[in-house]
Image (cartoon, rainbow, N blue to C red):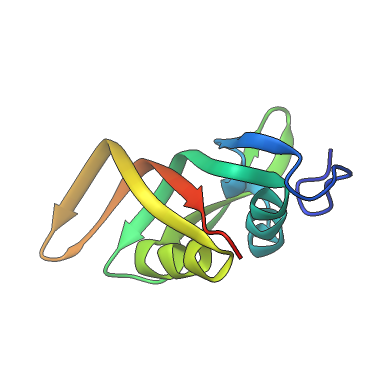
Length: 117
């Protein structure tokens, strides 16, 4: 499926997991919106690379045999995006993190509850 235009109905699944793919989607805001739309109760963004104290960082790289983009998200902006899509952060799990002088990066899993609208 195209994560930016899922063919499922609204609230189709109790839990929706975005597993380490958001970083490869240039239209990631649309993908987050679609995840929120099809989730009835929870949305999980697993292994999401974030940067701290700096704007989004974009890379071009070879992955899976093709040239692809990789985005490391400014964490406060990413959390605001989740909130705008009606997703309340209820837990996050840090897989790794490096911060020096307020600037750094991390890989986290964000567990969100869909806010009733």
